[in-house]
Image (cartoon, rainbow, N blue to C red):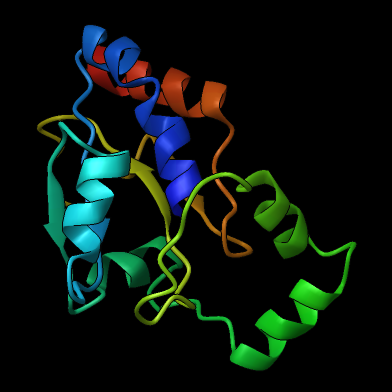
Length: 149
């Protein structure tokens, strides 16, 4: 998820915590102060975990990472009808950092607390396009379901 999507999810932190949900972020790299800037501006009071081996990103996409190429990224930015272009417009006003790799797709898992290894996630959203975020209401409903299970 991009910073705009993280900000949108984090805005519902109070509602999620009231339901017994614990938000966590997973990032793939730290270059300079990017993680501390993310924490300060978008994820201030929730844990952030580092996953330099990218296992989480592979798990999101069925066992292998999904990565956009520079050429496809530029083509989609130039296409006013592309989903990426729509995602970029929706993120207007949220400052990015343009630091680091930036082309590996992320997403969201909602897992039940105490779930045994191998249990399916209650909810999963893998970015089809960079910046795709899960529908907020579906994410919150799944998180509440996981917390009450």
